Length: 130
Image 1: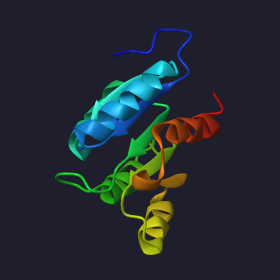
Image 2 (image 1 turned 45 degrees about the vertical axis):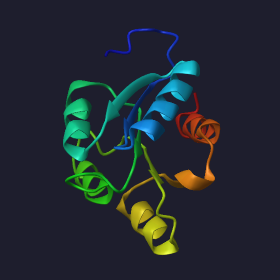
Image 3 (image 1 turned 90 degrees about the vertical axis):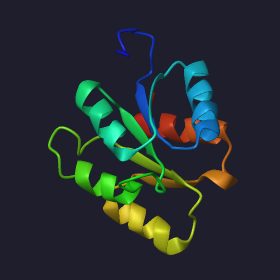
């Protein structure tokens, strides 16, 4: 899926293995005119990043295979990927988890259980300024 539509606000990669949450976010971002890419694990996310222009990543921590923090740390070392803003979306909200995510390079950390999809869209808009 390419973002050739000049009206699109940007491309968001949702890295989320929960299909219900992923579906909610995809619908909300589509309504707001964002290009949406979805990956259910870190390996699929990396493939998507290699093949598409992604403006922001929403990243869950608990994923099959490589966890979100390890994935984040790895892309922050890649010249073509390190500047893509990453917002962690997780149900792990303990202060040490939040700190770990921010230290790994996330621009923000959202606890999904406490946040409506519309609030996540607003956070993305503020980060992308679009």
